[in-house]
Length: 220
Ligand SMILES: [Zn+2]
Image (cartoon, rainbow, N blue to C red):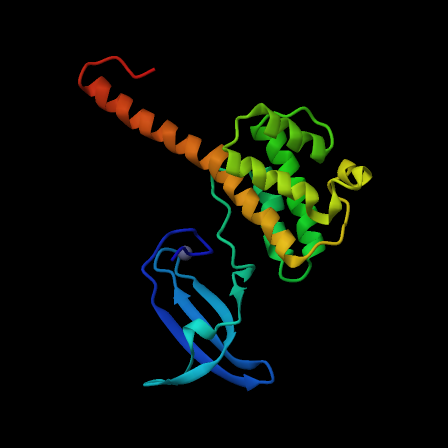
């Protein structure tokens, strides 16, 4: 698993602390220690319980909810470090407020998307709906990603209410699934615009270093 403090991947070992039962079934804390940063990753887990050698434990396939309590926030993977800080900031907050307010999360993720499209796709600043159209029309996105951001316009009825589309910070009624969709799409866009290109640059640099050692000209 990936540590949600330091983002380092580590071999997970779970310590489970059973808390008890209420009307919403059983509760336990799952603890994973990160050897890289020496911090605990803690989750409050809810589901059905069964007996094990160490007493009652939550049964994996009955888990109803998992709430990240340290570090606090959603269970979403952390923002990749290749993403510019100004964009990452809105994304992190959109994830953080998601368990409490879909509306607040969606407003933040829409603003994040707008800044991302302006920064990475270089769209002409307009309203979000038009900016999304510009990116789709450019044909530079894989079709699946294009369809995914297109769907964001329908969330909170953006397409039907052009005025809403003008201001990304507008609070509109959204379902939790819709707010989550925004975050999923942002995650895919981060990968497409920032993570993959950075990987290519790294690979090219490594190759060029080898070519130069061999006395050959660098790859263009
Ligand atoms: Zn860590």
